[in-house]
Image 1 (cartoon, rainbow, N blue to C red):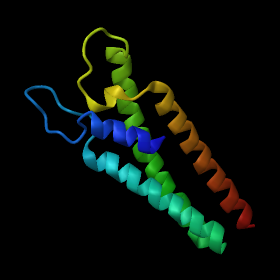
Image 2: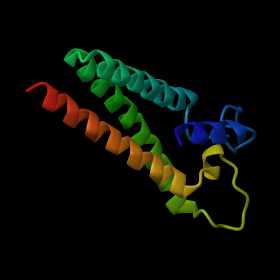
Image 3: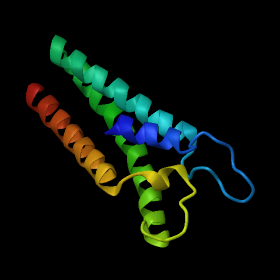
Length: 129
């Protein structure tokens, strides 16, 4: 789901510079790529923890995934605020890259992210006993 959202953002001009008074995105590229990079790094560390069984790697994975979740929550807040203000079903054109995100995909991505962080936390806590 995350890759779909990233490619949707890119395909709809997320990296383009502003034209006139209309910005191409509310999300700065470092926010998007920082979120994606931290998520990928955290999941790679999680796989390493599962393969090697080293508790320190598990805690590191949790820390990195928590950072990714914080950036994701920031983007969700920005996206949600504009969805409420402008409405997704307005007749006018959508101009920003993230206006093209399907709400079920955004919500599903967030639910999987929260579940992942919770499961990583539970597993690391249980293995540290």
